[in-house]
Amino acid sequence: MCDTHSEPPAVPPGDPVSAGWVEALTGDGAQREDSIARLHVLLVKIARSEALRRSGLNGIVGQELDDVACQAADDALLSILRRVTDFRGESKFMTWAYKFVIFEVSNKLSRHAWRRDSPQWDEASWELLPARLGAGPEEMAESRELVEVVRAAVDGELTVHQRRVFVAIVLEGMPLDSLVAELGTNRNAIYKTMFDARRKLHAHLITRGYVTSRLERDA
Image 1 (spheres, one colour):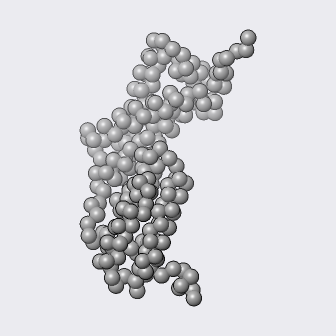
Image 2: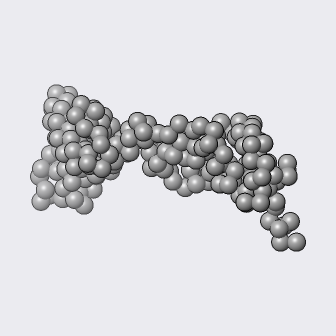
Image 3: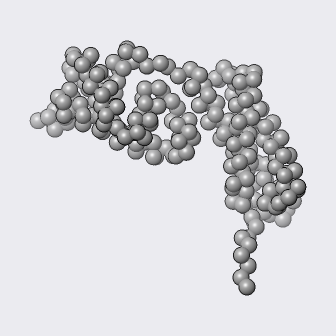
């Protein structure tokens, strides 16, 4: 009969501590639960230290900072448990685990600061949008009407996903990495969505005569 068990992670024999972590976390029963609890304590300490180190850059302090650190540690733990069999001993286990915590702290602080300080888009802010879609100075004379056309295009021409990405990045100024983490995607996918959304909106403005096409400008 074939052995149906997967091969254990290739942890170097010279690193018994890393080997111990992997063995415990891929096992079962009380030993695994105890190891998860011990690892979580370490991850929380790392997350708090990293969040505190960055606090001077974003103004997040006190209980607010501690909440972010705890959330980062929780999510890092889940990622580590999902990927522990990917560990190949190229570094010590805790060095490997440390990277997950830093990633989560960075994303959560960035997203938290954005949500706390995100600008409210008022009429003046909307009036800046047409220029971002390709309208030149000579095409801004009818700006009020143009703004309404752009608003209608955002609502009517974009898919739900395109509108979500466009509004988050262009209207609300959400950091790209935060949006990537929130949507569970990657940078290239966001770039593609933004490209498609901008192309649709620009084409909408050309069709209605608010923006001159490149062919017309070059003629």
